[in-house]
Image (cartoon, rainbow, N blue to C red):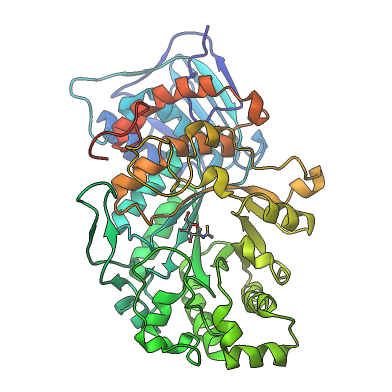
Length: 527
Ligand code: TNX
């Protein structure tokens, strides 16, 4: 017999049918929240309360009834939880408030897809959960999603919605790609032109390339520091860490458009630059001057005050060196520092911020190009151009987040058909994502300990609103979440058919949440 929780995504470590009748959630059900369980109780009231219309008041009866939420540090790893559902009561225990929160997420899945609505089902008064025991803990501690809000801005509301979607899939690191050539999206009080000028572009291409919707229109937007504080707090309430990314020294044209002195002024007339309205790799990179370093230290001071995360992402990717080769200022710097070439100059730039962040108790993470010219002492690496960068970094004792574009770039199309709405890159199917293995076989167990985890990346060149983002993200993000959380066998041995069957159940949840996922049969005409 299939276990009662067969539709759970991501798959838990252990699920066993419990004994006795189902647990009934109804108007009499209270929530007993022990010490450290207040957050999970608040979340359950807000979500399951809204979906069911039930009060879920604080429980006043004994321990053998109601919904019992408890922190039990002896349960296992920091994010472990156990869910015991039986006659009369449901007990969610977490090794920490975080583990408990993941247990509460599983409990909502067990209630059925209607528990994901934002308003009650009319006439439904009781909700049944079959007796079951779930024991669970994640495989990786970094289960990330990167969202690029620079190429297309996602208003605050959409970001908060994505944090909810992440939590529903037990993802816990939100990598917030806040700056790029095409837009600067975070208010920096001491440099107001970054958003006054850098957050808007006159033209952008949006829509389906094959349709008349493919048009050029102005685009922009940014988050105030208050918006950012709200996003960070909303994430923390869901046990998600927000890792901000401020991209240097490449992908910086929006900043140069706002403050032309940041660019290589002896090579081009940077005052003629505007926020970039094209996609690709941009030659207009930051000048390696003291002025640039001081400017970005100022930016990062404000960033650190807003984001408590241990890691701060400084980009470091795709920095063409052509302007540095032609710039007298850059060449003088190379000579003065005794460097061999422009790669080492980039490395010097990154090292500067590595030291600067370390002095403030933070850690630097960057894309795998930061390996070129020598990796800074404490730096961690986001391995995106395949596994090679991550392998080299782990062997050198650096921490790594595996996010190879070959498997987990969700901006790439998910089927080869001519109707796929988003024309970027290669085909990465749901099965490709499901068979992605974050820890390369080449690493010894000792080296593999440096793989903090994995991350799916959503670059938004061709996703102009959250409907498009949903379409690209789902269902693949559900497969990714299972790779990041669950103890899956080696890729070839993974039960993709079984995952697809659970995905059918999971799509009912996504329907209730209003996620515009790619339907299994292919895109709808308007997508
Ligand atoms: C490469 S991944 C980039 C991004 C693009 C993406 C498109 C990385 C560090 N750089 O700037 O948006 O490809 O797939």
